[in-house]
Amino acid sequence: MPPSPVTTGSRSRAGVRTVGQSRRSHRAVRRRPRARTASARPAALSADTLRRVLPQALVVAFLAGGTSAFVAHDKAVTLTVDGHPRTLHTFADTVDELLAEEGVRPGAHDTVTPARGERLANGEEIAVRGGRPVALTLDGERRTAWTTARTVGAALREWGVRTEGAYVSAGRHARVDRTGTSLVVRTARRVTVLADGRRLPVRTNAATVGEAVRQAGVTLRGEDTLSVPRDGFPREGQTVTVLRIVGTDTVRDELIGFRTVRREDPRLSRGTELVTRAGRYGVRRTTYHQRTVNGVSGKPERVATEVVRKPLPRHVRVGTGEPPAGPADPADGDGPDRRAPTACASDVPADAGQPSGPYGGLPRTGTRDWRAPDDEGGTRRAHAAEQGPRAGKPYVPQGAAEWPVCARKLHR
Image 1 (tube, helix red, strand yellow):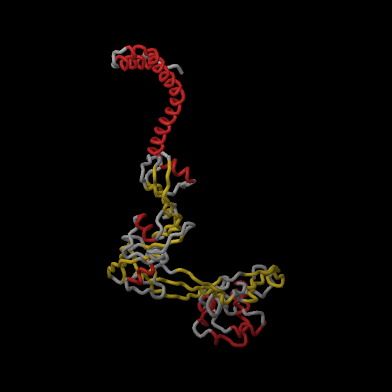
Image 2: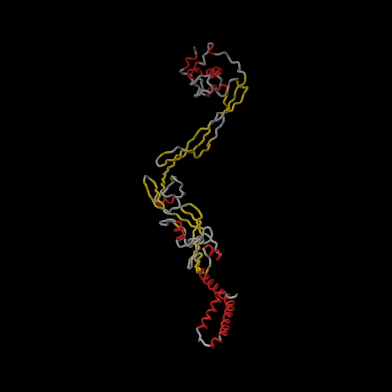
């Protein structure tokens, strides 16, 4: 590059000033052309030198400035990941850039301090704490909790769990594994137990209501129970009532009715029924349980039943034949009126179906007497129209001795 006119001109005048200051002599005058020649050479050398040195000077100046910038952007920081520190030199401007350079990828449950978007300064300390899953059962409720703490005690403080008087399944200094840990915590709760007319407050970390009741000094006996499930979890401020129960069993026998089986019999007159086998009631035995709760009796409940005797059906023969032609009614002749003592001495009218009483609507004579003449089951099973004639059969051999009171009615 040719020297600038300003730079070159400046050098010529300097040379003139140097020559003018020499002695005014002829020798000097004669040497002036040589002085000009000597003056021209340095100017030419300066131009060549400038062409050589200027690029190098620029490079040196650039390098000097770059080194200053390099030094200004280099930062020494400390990166700690899960308790393991490292000192690093980095050109990263933010925490995120530094983590990316080091291949650290924080998860959703990890924490980074300072925040990931913060700018880095020389001497900065960056801490990355990995989240640890904990299968936590807190006061009966199960969930997965995350923590960056490395001990159980620190994790409980991080979650804000009250540990005074609490039950913790692991020691406070136990480590929380990176892969996961199970932990059961039951905090202390206030529970009130009502039993036997007393109010018993208790502070407990029990796992069940039944255990809390025992801690209150109450014992359950027999059928005693609680107002809430015994295996339930006791809650803060809960009131539990003890129900004293006395059970009583009562056994009752109940009759089971029998059915009647009727069969037609043409040998019997129409309208006549003959019981060939009496029915028998069955017996059902039932057990009832009655509870008295805190002195108040409840409704009996059926708890068991069994049939101790089965019922037997009654068999009846029903007449379908024509009634036999009998003798004239003794009441219409001179003989005794055998129907009159019937009304006098029997408990029910003679025409009542299956009348009750030992004499079945007939005069007071034994069944043995009635059966003796014909052995057909006794007059008491006969139709009302036949009772009169049948009653006359024992009268013939025995007379009126069987009717001491009603004999006067034999004759009108």
